[in-house]
Image (tube, rainbow, N blue to C red):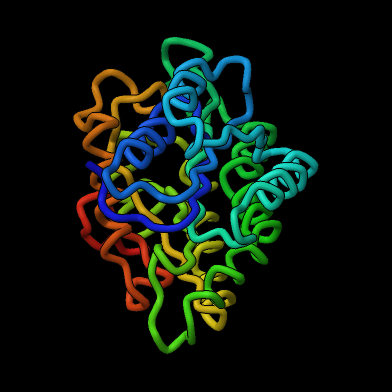
Length: 267
């Protein structure tokens, strides 16, 4: 079962993989949040998410949100704001992300320099870094209200008060690049997630005065469409670990990068 995550929660990229599993574990927890907003770009293809929503109609709301489209983000913010019980949102999990470009011949794995151009770099940067920035901007007032209702900032920060969790990756670590590059070059993915890390640090500095915690979590190498069939971590174990780590976060974790097992990762 998921660890205790209270209040209202928004999860992006909820139609499959880690996002879908996070929503499922939250919804099926004995201490489920009061409201779960499952955001995804393609509502027509989100069959598993729709089935989950049918099992939890009073708890789970599906929201269309394309993180690469500022208009879609603004509209999703309005929709969520209209449905929030008290106008406050306790937690945003920025999970939506893309990888690429795909292999264009047998000699070049995805994301190598040989198959990477301007478009690939820009597309991943927009989705993986700009999107989470716009979401933080658009939904900030709901987080502020949640933090205000929890009392003075001196009482501490947590995911049950108000928080943004950015799903990052070990591959975003500049310090770890020499260790990880050979197994996964992936220029656009690494660079865009490194940008997400800086965004995390900036938001952590900016939002801490409101009592809003911001940090990043590496979910592990997970067996998903993105991670591939050889990944050693299941979506179930990854999501369980992520939710447990989030339940333990305090102000000392603000602006940090950790993995799904609670270990710190250097920037």
